[in-house]
Image 1 (cartoon, rainbow, N blue to C red):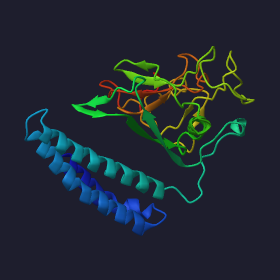
Image 2 (image 1 turned 120 degrees about the vertical axis):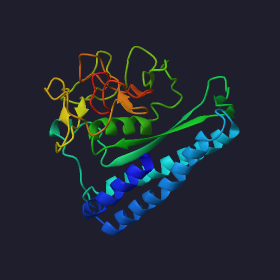
Image 3 (image 1 turned 30 degrees about the horizontal axis):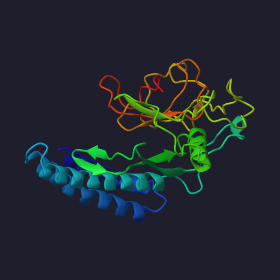
Image 4 (image 1 turned 45 degrees about the vertical axis):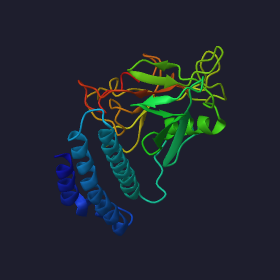
Amino acid sequence: TGSKKSRTMIKQTKSKMTASCRDSNTCAAILESMDAELDPLEQSLKDSAAVLNGSEQERKALDAAYASQGKIARQLTDLEEQMVPANYETPVPSDYDDLPQLKGRATVQFILQKPDKAPFDVEGTNYAEAKMTMVIDGFASPVTGGNFVDLVNKGFYTNMKIQRSDGFVVQTGEPDGDAIGYVGKPSKSIGAGKNGERLIPCEITVRGDKGPIYETTIEDEGRGGEATVLPFSSYGAMGWARDEYDPNSGSSQFFWLLFDSDLTPAGKNVLDG
């Protein structure tokens, strides 16, 4: 089972992981907590499979499973951050000093409401609003992450409508008017869009590299088969929208993927975003 494999992996790599942490005792405690949470996760999944599909009992069991999964994911984040040296900052070329940058990680919560105040119907239960929590990784994408957090703090996305929702992606970030992105002071290196949009460079960190590559894609660099640090082709991943043939055309539009790729492993396809 998945929990058995996870428990085996934790046991086999515990010494190596704790040795990589700033505080080995803290990481050991995190790993123990993750291991303990695997049992309720597995039991909840078994409970959901043992009852009628669509029943209240299934919903209760799945909610418990999601809660355990979320707790483990947060613990994994804590573990990863323990492995980053104190005060570490991802190296960014000086060309982008005039763009916002995110040092470390940030958590952003979006609250979604329907225009007519209609409820969100989630498997028969109505909710007045929907909340989405995103972890923005400034270690792997300091410029892209910094740009996004800067716009969130400016209130740019407040009361903005979802502009695309088609079963493939959910997308927003285009303001009213002629501009297709955030209008603000552009960087000297990237410049502005045709309607004054502040543009940011394409920024990708490939596994094994010390920092991101900029203003190009891994395909153009001949590295299309290599995996990125942030997986793209996976359910719930956040992508930065750009013109198809211009890596430096991103500004403020972003989207969430609503599927897991059947053909391309997660992290090995950034052509679509």
